Image (cartoon, rainbow, N blue to C red):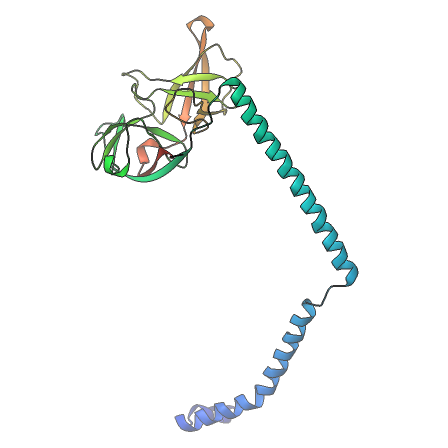
Amino acid sequence: MIALAVVLLNLPPMAAGRLRVAVSSLFLPLFGLAGSFQSLADQAAFTPLTRSTLIAEIERLRLTQQQLQLSDMQGRAALEENARLRSLLGWQPQVRWTHKAARVIGREPTTWWRTLTLDFGGRHGARVGQPVLTSDGLVGRIREVYPLTCQVVLIGDTECGVSTLVRETRDQGLIQSTASDPIGEGVVLLRTLQHSPGILAGHTVVTSGFGGVFPPGIPVGQVVDTRSAEGGLYTEVRVRLAARLNRLEEVWVLTQKSP
């Protein structure tokens, strides 16, 4: 075996190539046999179903179709009822919004992080008051618009009041900081409209949609803690913002969609 190995290793290139071809031709039938077995296995996996199995599958699909038709009927009825109630109460349908991406190109050079500058201006459709957010939550609103850029005032600033709703308790409140209250560690102060002892740490705060600027349901943050204020007239809630305002690079600007 050692002598054979030495001979094979020292064969000229042409002779070694011929030897490889000869050995391959010897094993080729085995490769073909393995391929045939694999083909038979694949065909067995797709064996035609029996008549009874096909009938059962057709019946299952028929029942599923009927269930979907009933769900569609219920959904249409709910939409019609919703439209009638809105008409009776004089409620207007919710404004449709679309979103446009923008990049942060500047920020206020202080630790308060009150404003941002975006590469999104009047030529791109920017308008004063448009909400700005990330996939995590609310960032603020546009305060000033220029041809190619705009300035965004961040949530927690005195110029960016946000009407909010605690999702678990339905308590309403307002986020409106004072000029001497910086946004420290991404926490802002929420004041409820009345005493709200049911608000607990971990509850979710979203926009209520009642302020006329931000549509309802945008995540704002989570409750850190609460305390009674003004002798129990209302509750002060510390909220940790969902959006990380000190690490923003790209944001979304909400614009009203044309009917």
